[in-house]
Length: 537
Ligand SMILES: Cc1cc2nc3c(=O)[nH]c(=O)nc-3n(C[C@H](O)[C@H](O)[C@H](O)COP(=O)(O)OP(=O)(O)OC[C@H]3O[C@@H](n4cnc5c(N)ncnc54)[C@H](O)[C@@H]3O)c2cc1C
Image 1 (cartoon, helix red, strand yellow):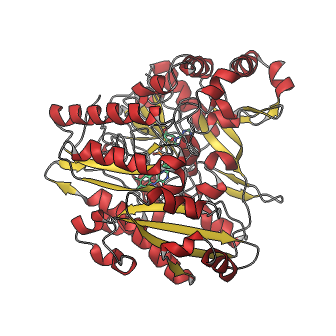
Image 2 (image 1 turned 90 degrees about the horizontal axis):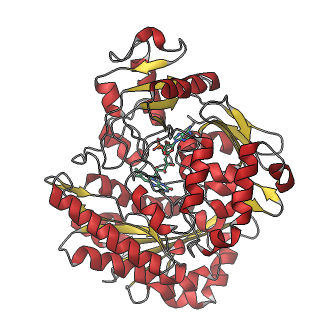
Image 3 (image 1 turned 180 degrees about the vertical axis):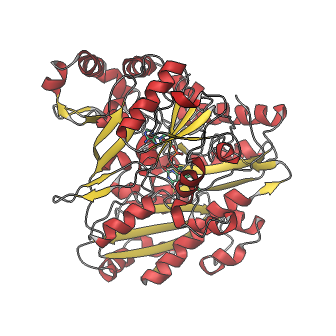
């Protein structure tokens, strides 16, 4: 493990509710890019001979600007040699070339909101300040990597289109980061993760210029250039083993998604790049599918005990909701924010389950009556139909994210590590119990919430990881929970990715196919230049 910091997360861009606390109200969601633009212009890192930089690349010098790049939303702090802001694709290619010449790792970075330490490195941090969005005639959207998801949402909404994947960090995270992390949101249960929306990317791989990465027929791939041919053969020859080793989950962000690349006679190379966490190439553009936004929404909130959790989730699941979320009420009590959820909490049951339905056919009242004549009625749900009430309830649920950033007792903070476990959906209650036991048996306080529909939980213990003892405890918990989750057919990460924090465990999640991931990494990045230490060790 590397240097752990004390929890001064230093997130320049955050969820809107957090922005206020971080003093970024002016300048909106793009605060980080704006400040880098301003501060980076014309400055040079004193360690690097200035005249050796390509003219167009602006560098971020030592000082507070570089400090911003030492940490993302994770717990590992690494000081990079310098940061670069690329203005166009040529700049990106030149920056990667510089990294190659100087034998410096290149870490692409977007909003810096990644949790398992993916956007930090000791070499060069490469930012792209590109904000282009073009909606095509057939409803796809071509997006440059610096576009923040909330901004994309606004542009799509104005054109009557929608891209449903909204990570809770949507006000801060960029399309580059979402594609690289295969990010998900509360509606992934119905609409899928980022991967399901990526049709093609443009990317720079070491030693090459930016080039399109799109799907082709398997036949074309097998008679293509040496690298394409080798990747396609590796995936074809080992497809049974690859399938066997997949976790039995509805969401997974660990390793490369080998099982997704070959399907229906197609070699879908973009699917290999999505979720690669900046380790295979630097995206300079992504083409995303969009859809019409839903005409109506309906939100139901029920309370549940641990014992009833599986049956509550199953009762909802049969009606195909858009999202099914879980919140541990105790978080609000511990942080004296009980008023946030008071109106949804009518009993002593420890959990709240939020279930949202949406659609373009029929209306919310039709859906409500379908549910009223099903087993859902027996759960005694609060039924919210008005858009303002629905928005208010989601805000209450999202408050848990603010709390997660705020909780701190001395040098104890809520730490990631097992913050993104996912198991087969019917094992939801087992996962809740596993985490509860892991924390409570060690006398640790914790927060817990997550995506009940995908049995993907965001639970974090309160720990001081600046010292050896705390770090050892964290490793022990990770070891114990990962083993248990693998036995259940689950994954260490449903949406956040492996990062540096979980890189050393990836081989254990995929003992029989990790070598294929390694070979693919070498095919695209033979010198291990891109995002060293992330995903692979
Ligand atoms: C409060 C909070 C809530 C969150 N909620 C969610 C959630 O609901 N769902 C979810 O999935 N995640 C969530 N996350 C995690 C994180 O926000 C997402 O993974 C997000 O998409 C990362 O985007 P970013 O722009 O911040 O990327 P960064 O953190 O800057 O980078 C993420 C990864 O992408 C790579 N990368 C960035 N740009 C490029 C590029 N142009 N080319 C190649 N690689 C690139 C980086 O190297 C790194 O590996 C949350 C994080 C926080 C702090």
